[in-house]
Length: 137
Image (cartoon, one colour):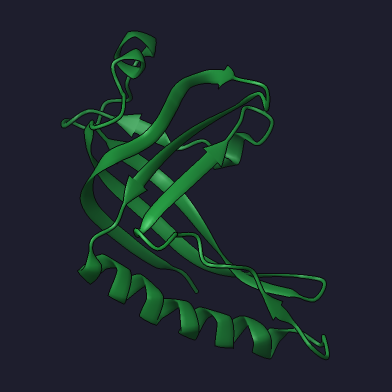
């Protein structure tokens, strides 16, 4: 059970998609979602959490907080240590971007994102994974 969303947005905040860096040795980017996308994702979230709670034997499972802040900004952090979390950046024709092209991605870059929201369980935690599939730059 997974829900997928594709939407156009602009990158926001600190953007580092080229290589692991800074004191935490990771990569990151942020983006804002619009109200319509938020309403769709938030509505689906309750369905996914209900599904996940049905699958657990925990007496009081608790939910992991929302991935967005009050401004509907989502920050995505990943690193080479978890290769499955690394999103694929492609151009308009679907070709993967090379290192030189990745260097050009910065705050304000217009992107089309493909995002998946899936439920998962971990001990007493009930949540939904919010992962970036690809970003078209």
